[in-house]
Image 1: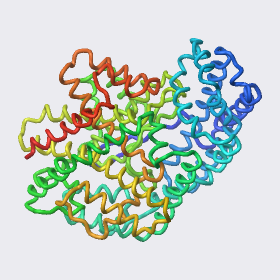
Image 2 (image 1 turned 45 degrees about the vertical axis):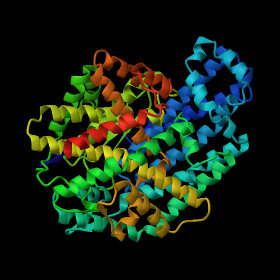
Image 3 (image 1 turned 120 degrees about the vertical axis):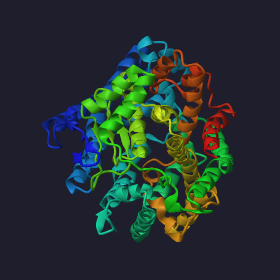
Image 4 (image 1 turned 90 degrees about the vertical axis):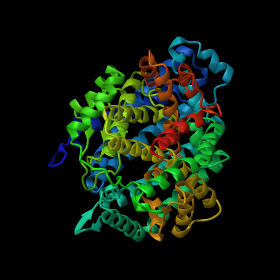
Length: 588
């Protein structure tokens, strides 16, 4: 798609998966998966504990193959839907596929439930079989939940009802956001387009965008509050049945990270608010000749920033050049996304807001969705999502059960890609004023990734704790939101009542409760990782690519050991935050 300012923006080619939603291959793969699921149940249900190591390895491979086939169909439906959530036919297709996959996988719910009932000593004996041993990390991840497992009947009920429970509320949220049109300067803008205006050079446009967003979200406050309350209560009920102590506990267990490690991260970032965000925004207000910054000016370009639009081809060269200077292999994998139609970049009505990299399945390849407006931030977003994509390609050979990386490391490659791009831009910039603009932009990105995401985490924690007592009106949710935002951003930021509803557009609260700390985890981790690279660059790239290629086959402790890093070390997070503080020092 051509854009006069940005050049030709790529749109993805989903034909590598299926030609269209009506393609016969979709029904063929679903029929094949249904038959395989029934065959798995016929051969193995009630028998897993009695199998030898070799027999269990064969069963796991069959189960993995089933996940790969269903992953391809489900991913295609999700990508079609993300391309235009306002199209009712896309919504119908997505829902139908979700329901079909739920029906098919009902036959194999027994698989992980029975794995969790195998005696530990007996399982360790089976794992001595080489063919089964490679799946040991997957067994560990599955069995981490065994103490929280319900009866087979209850698990089947939760599974069957998921498409009309949480998934349906997720879809309602997505379609509500995608369908919103906000009147601004004689135009009808999407939520994503309006959010983009909060980084516009024109302060009047930023203020107007904030007002339009506040009015649009506020008009739907009751609906957003209902969605949020329902999903929080749904989580509380399931957490209670599964006997999770805290709302965050299930996420930590799934992330393969200890509660105390997450608590240490949250504590370290919260304690650093005054010397990071509070200090930076005071400096920024001074650049604008003010004592206070309105919240809509938080991400405003600096007064001397030309705010030049960066064409797509230039953005591509910047990111691939930065990747290539670090590792030619990294850049070569990244180049495939541009050459093979794996990226969808134009911002269009109905399209999913924000950006993501979808891994699809190891037998296929990832796809990247962007809303590219040509700002430096958009170039950094490209670097971020391409990092995810390269990570997913490298981890693919691990297979469907071991390719996915725990969220604690899922943001590592993406944030590292941003850091490589930032450092490359900074190295070639000699003008002091332009360097300050670059550093300020990077600081703001890091604050958004670390401070803002931990503030989001604290908001979620308070919201879920309060929801355990009673349903929360939109006003109460807004009150919690405003308190956590003020605490994190500091006294320099000025908020009006319109900001109280801004919690409503954050998709992570709806789709992935307590995901957000993974961003802060990744940023602080990458800061320490990059410092290790600067201290000893020889051989670092190979160790880094090996870490990405491990996917989910190792836990964070083992993956970080080659770099001399340990996230359980209380000093670890302080080292990561020191890099942000150092950049702020350069601006003071």
